[in-house]
Image 1 (cartoon, helix red, strand yellow):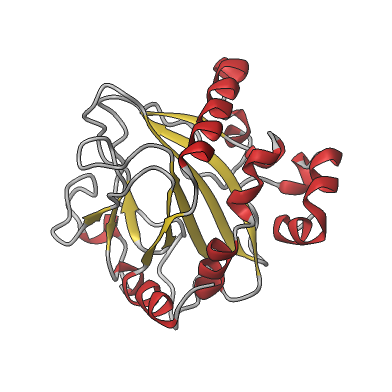
Image 2: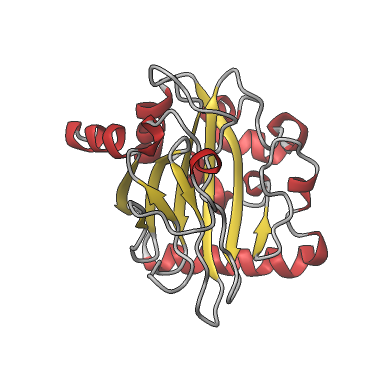
Length: 245
């Protein structure tokens, strides 16, 4: 599902643009479902994040959040079963992996800035990567609306942002921005330095993260705890294996 050149790029730079995997109609349908969930869950939106001790940002004032999307409709199944995404995850983690969480994040107007960080407690050696993320764009990502920043090749460094930067909120001289149209999907090795930027527009900037970890690591969202019978039956053996249920 990935070319040799794509795998080499991902290994070298720590991220990969998979292109537009969703049609404009699919983007609209997902955004409509997200709107429904935000309204129905209200103040409890993203409550599952607060219950997990493995979430780095359980309560982020600068962003709208939803969690446990696995169990909130078949429209979200593609986010952890798409063959090109899984090929990217396997290129980073090998074949022994599972979904850690499937969450929604939307940077609010004039907010959304995050420190440069990694999604693991320390650096790794010999390419023993433990976590890998995919970010699905549900608005065009631009220079102005809080697009994600990444420091290419930083997944191979022996230091973390807060160890070498005076302020990890600052712009890094080597950082690049994920700039792409809605419907696009990016894989990034979660050991790469990354973070959200400030949304300088008057509209939220929407995305969904399907986040994976190696098989032996704990999930951010305990899929066994939340899985419903309807979801379990719908997704079949392959889906249940990916969720480790």
